[in-house]
Length: 440
Image (cartoon, rainbow, N blue to C red):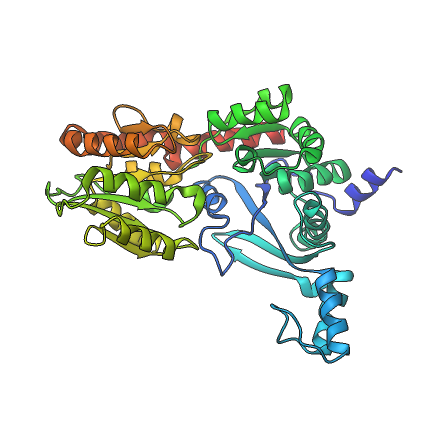
């Protein structure tokens, strides 16, 4: 008996065609960790959209924490009475030794179980085998993921199908599971790393193989599909667009939409304050268009490492009376901001999709976005404007145009179009058919 058949028999699936299909979701980032309300949120929304279908969902969430060289270094420093380095300053000798032992030989202590939105979530925590580096981080992630999969199957049984999100690293794990246990997998690519040039060239051959062996291969936007063909070659031409789904919260708003006064006119931006989001360009554009006009306001929802620098830039541009930094706010608060704003603006340098755009459209807002990838296929003349990325003068002119033409945009029509294109009903019907096809 070969190794594959032996392992398959060890974790055998019941031969009951009428039972619920068991789908294991493999995100490449953590799934709804306590420290971040955004990580894994797209997979969470997809699971919510599928409620009511004869499907049983599980999620394997992998986290890498600490590196083995770091643990060894701090254990040696502790032996000689020297201070430990952050973030291990609070660990004593015994605790460091135990942590190192657990990471060298993964044990039950690194695996936890919980239920979120009727999905069985298994969390596994591993360590980097070497100091973190993009060329070999996948090896540590796979080591932890294999350990987590073993405990997932032991607890919840073998899945019928795996839906991996991003080739690095979930796709690599799904490929290993298919090779060893015969479980087919789907692959959806979301990552902006390819556009940013952050994927090491040496990993591209194994990514091509992962794409080739997937039962079906999806990208969240046609533009990302073109990027993947440029990066991976002809094998990526099999990609099928599968857009993200609207979060349930943004489908609940009944019509008619709130009536808004023309003054003050409020632009809203939603996103983490990171360089890739282009907030500095947004502030410069807003200053060119509206500096000193008390009837034009800009509200920024989100937080991040650029908060202090952007606040200082707003002051230098003389925009303090017109700009409000809201910080990190809840999804409910984001929705409320959208219902009171006049337009949403997205100034990113790179986006593979742009969920915030469809959320705004579901609230009846016209949108202004940079043509930075995903927005190219979301924004049309009836729901907003596109401008070239990295051009403050072009964005300033577009902001002025949108403000002047705002009464011509029909909020109810924008919302209806968003629900038809990205609502949960149509998404769930398509994804269920995909799952049925992949399991047959």
